[in-house]
Length: 237
Image 1 (cartoon, helix red, strand yellow):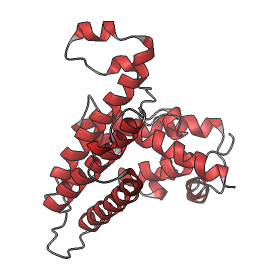
Image 2 (image 1 turned 30 degrees about the horizontal axis):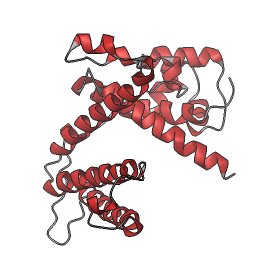
Image 3 (image 1 turned 180 degrees about the horizontal axis):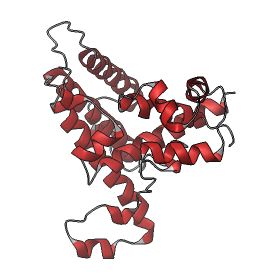
Image 4 (image 1 turned 30 degrees about the vertical axis):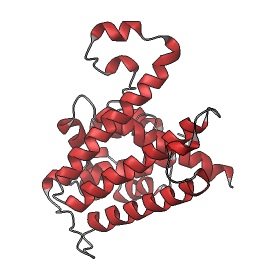
């Protein structure tokens, strides 16, 4: 099997999520602990036989193990996977509008999951700063759309365009810093912190159990975002 940077990360994550020792996993898979350690560290490449064997052992798809799908069952999300409040509305969607609506549904579903998870941390700081962060992102995009038509009056906004981009980015970084501090349990300047509990433990399985209809949206956002970041990283090499 050719080298795959996701394989070692995913098989290590699966084993640790399920509380299985490396020795027990190696025994069950019929390989030495040293060899499994090499697979988990990406030192050695496994063959197709082992790929199938470990796929069966963890009850996940080969596509998931190889990072081709964010879903453990290897499923690929489609537009039809999202429920529509008005079934007739889906039939009226033009092919040219489908990708726009698909991405909108991904974002809305992912945002709902994020705020549900934030609520379980018990941190008002995290909830408030996360909301401010997203509102600033929407504000920036709205200004871009507003600027797409030169007839739109710039006086619609109080802050001039020359300053708005930098100021909104600075405000987002401030929110991001406050969120991260709260999430990591760092209290300062009257901010509260997140409470670690079993409700805030996140795995692919737990997300699927908590959000059976929409977890795939968040998993795809993660995969798509990291693919875009990898493209940037690779372009600088």
